[in-house]
Length: 497
Image (cartoon, helix red, strand yellow):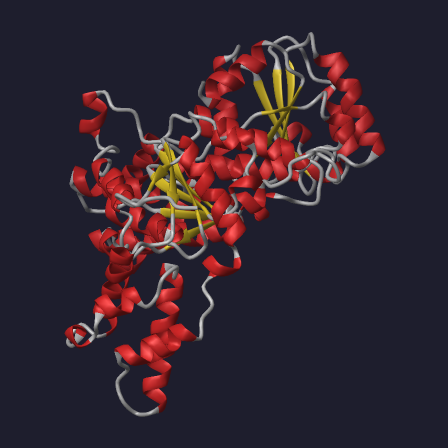
């Protein structure tokens, strides 16, 4: 159900108090006015703390700097045509006992009248005593059609005709931004050189990165790694390569659903995070990194609001990759104790979205400790597949050494004994192999020469791999996988205990 359909239904059903959390005040008010017009041509009144009511000259300034008087004004409105009263930034006054009590009284008086109060706020902040009387409605970011209309309106004022393909490029790059931000960045580009140029898409992407950073929930992560940068993990790479075109229109015509995502479980340093970056680069999709810890806020309802904001933003930016690193740490030990059940509610919202989402958001979650994951996370339907990323085999270690050394010393990689290096580093993870090479470079650099295979082996002898210090956890993981709960990411890799 679209916002307009849901909002008009609430107006017709006489929902007295509606809460609209959004930064797009101007766009929201315009959408509300259109809905009010379609539902009995209702009058629209707007109040804010500084200007008071601004609907017409006869009562301009009424209830200025007085939120309680603003609510009392609602009782004087005629019920003949019906009215929608918009209160800007009203969340700041909800803790006032007189304002809260007046809202609760109005909710009883208006539930049979064609008068609706809409609270527009840039953030979700609802006191517990008002949760039962306020109905929250999500106001989504502009869709592709709205963005296209905005772009076409902007270029209509300049002597320029953009081809349809270029307009579509601007629309795709602007998804996930508010109309105000889109208008601002495109107007700046036009002011700079008198027209929109193909390279201005990069300006829009820069604005998007800034917007995402400001949410303090998601990070727009640059993805430069390629599938070829992953040493080993052939089963996982084959699975990803087969789904490379799954976000295309051709796949929809074929009848394929959008891929949902995958969960990568395994030992630290085995390439799980690298895989997430490589997927985004190979599929040419934006990579969003979610720090689940940022979802949790101190105010009542703030955590749930941030979770909904994260979902809304990810879906607005789709198709995209949503990377959730170390998800086991975020949702470990869910008991609902100590935080009034906030963690459980956030997890419930998130897990329900995972199961029911239809938007092309491909979720890549990584976990080191599978015992910390709630059972609901591992149930079929949350992810397309669960892969176990084990320590690399001898041939995979040789491939990992080759990948790193080909980047660092592409001109003389033949001088390194890759087979010997792989043989002498049993139980080393990919991250530990990378660290031995870095340490070997320090050895060579300090002696004013290039580093050698012997330097790498000397560095390796000084490292105690995680496989030896976390044997119990690794053994549990392997037993868990051998029970058929996950697929092996590496081809023909025997799981030994």
